[in-house]
Image (cartoon, rainbow, N blue to C red; front, side):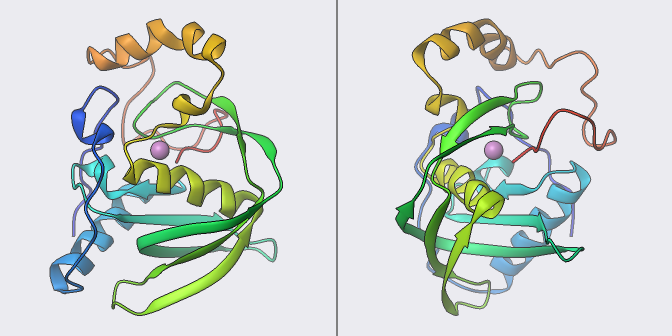
Length: 187
Ligand code: NI
């Protein structure tokens, strides 16, 4: 098990359409353990496989529960449908350090997919979990949260994005030792 380096905006793997997982084997489960470890090390609440350079349809999420504690799970070959509601909320992305913007997402949806043992599941999700799942699923299609902002907002972020693509990370960014901070939830 290992913390893997996170690919930053500008890396082509973040723009690729990820492949369906065909084999639910030990190497898949090892990758998922690495995703959990990496998400934790970077203090993230979600992480998709392309963000560690693996172009496969896999992501992990960890969200706080109202009753306390948190829930963590892996989703493989996800399908999202039956979306309802719309809400604007702040997002960030571990692949885009320093950028936090409000994004409009569905407030609820049906998630179907497979767990790391190849068992299919289906559940309705809402609230922050629904947001996280939409963000992570986008990663599997090469879509980043900034793509979902208004053209004006994207224009405003152009310079920052260009800097990230050139390998210039924001001042104060020291992955993965620095954890927490007031800069919103990073997915
Ligand atoms: Ni992200």
